[in-house]
Image (tube, rainbow, N blue to C red; front, side, top):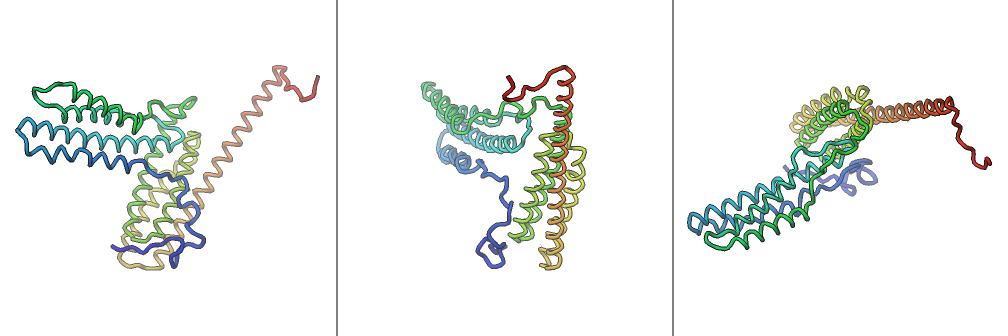
Length: 297
């Protein structure tokens, strides 16, 4: 279906450019460009396989399969690393996908360069170069947990599960609104998602906030997802302006309430910090320790 462009200078576009926050917190994914080229690089092995004897056929097809699997693992590893980097507190990926991809690249090049009866030196060189260059080009996987020092692991696991569930709701919202075929609404949903993710990051920084935010991460986002699915199906058929206005009003209410709750969580965290500081000062004073005043001899 053709879509009307809804950019800054288009009729009916948002005044002054994109709506504030439409791209807030977003980064260009690295799972493209060079990664996509990895899926094309093994094609010569497949094209030349069928003109050879059975052993050569098997070796070329094996090299093709190994390199395609390595390309897929590379892309998944980059996506996992981006998800790791986006969060304040995160566990390292359970599977080092990019490392496995480097190994598979080396094995694939060894298989592709091997010829029965020939020297093993050439395929070994190909394998070593493939492994090193792949690892250098895409880097290693995150190997350590991030931001876990001094954090209750049980609490952090609860937060991780709640955030993962909330992210699934946001992904379902995004998939549903695409069916409506309205670029301005897509940008509006992006704004709400950016606001919701600010709450996610706040809860990740202080897992004690999960109790206060659980309803927002669960019930409210589930309702927003269901409302978006129903709206997309109805608006895609009817193009009813009243339905569109009601849905935009719902997004506005959700964004306002999520932002307000996030501010409340931050204020509570500041208040808790002030209490901790005051209690510590009182303890130091009871121990007879006084901070030195500047200029006091």
